[in-house]
Amino acid sequence: MQILIVGGGLVGSTLAARLSQSGRDVVLIERDGELARRLTAKLDVQVIEADGTLARVLREAGIEKADVVVAMTESDEANMVVAMLSATLFEVPCMLVRLRNAGHEEGFAWIARERHRDYRAINPVSAAVDRILALLVVPGALDVAPFMDGELLVAGFRIRDGSDLAGLTVSHMSLLFADAPTLVAAIQRGPRWIVPHGGEELRAGDIAYFAIARADLANVIALVRGEPARRSGGSDRPRVLIAGATRIGLDLARRLEAEDVRVVLIEEDPVRAREAAEQLGDTLVVHGHPTDETLLEEEDIERVSTFVAVTEDYEDNLVAGLLARRLGAERAFALIDNPDLVHLIGEVAIDAIISPRLLAVSLALQHIRGTGVRSVAALLEDRIEVIEAECAEGSRLVGKPLADLSLPRGMLIAALRRDGRIVVPRGHDRIEAGDTVLFVTTLEEAPRVSTLLSAD
Image (cartoon, rainbow, N blue to C red):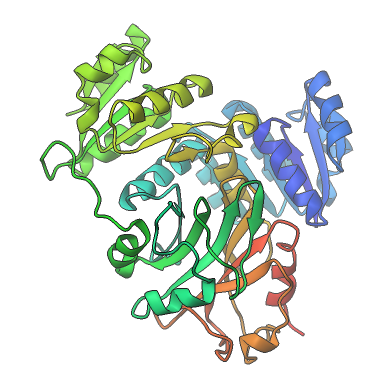
């Protein structure tokens, strides 16, 4: 598969690195000369220093031979130019375009309908809001990714000192969750990522990811956390405090208003604060800085169920989240798309990070990984992939006991969905044609999923 990526920023370069590691033939176009030179030294891909919105440059980069074109620049307008050239002049078969503006998404959808091709828009704002809302559903989770039309969640929890789970092996989990299809899918232990086998032992301090059927969520959370969730302010109505009237902050406030959540939004810029107050309904908009301790106390931070920092300053988000937790907020989420800061999470008191970069990369990968792949998510530090795929008739997985599949070390099958039912498979279980299969795999082994789904 030959892939042409326009835009070498965080999203484009991360995607190029992932695809290159998977054995794809990648060409990356970046107009900034200094960035292009850094990417040439860093990535195992062909990097072209040029303006990817020019037809001549796209042709010289090999667009006429490309199976997939990906437009991931920081500009919606530039991405739309690439989309129009790719669709009308070069008629590429598959295209992924990063768009933040709803109006641009509408225009791109028209192009896709007219061309009848596999053209997809990726909106990192919508993806970030969806991830935050998923986290709000799972008390105590550090990370949540929905699969199988939302019927299955992969959720990460820290194993605390004194937890009943500390010291248990993965195979013993079935005894605790006898009535709920639940599996330990991955473990982060310090700098190490583990796709566990049955004899792997959970330890205090681990971040353990569980594949949980949504219907059994409450029972599993009670066992994992070992305590009921705290209620905020003596009221059943949750309270969320958002820092930043950014696109993500505004969209999140609107979605939460629709769910009858009490929302306060803090914005430092007075013009933005006034505009946010005009655009939103029941949300209380406050002018101020999210790291102002007095302001947070005035807004009853100790009664807040979740503090969400989504300003455009990642360092501010980290500091504001830490301060909110110290002042009594039950949970704190921070928008952090700086790879150097992402690696700090787990060592500080932030409950979850939101990375639009990783979310956009995951959405792109699910359209590139191969036939049958329905969804892809990267866990925390981008070292583990969770891949949902449809198993078709003729696949080498069909009909064999799982114990006989000889999956590579670093890969496991965490769940199946068959006839609308979620199943945590055992070694004697067999995959049937039409099953939806959830793979958990290290980044290095992820390309082999497509091989397993293919015919013998």
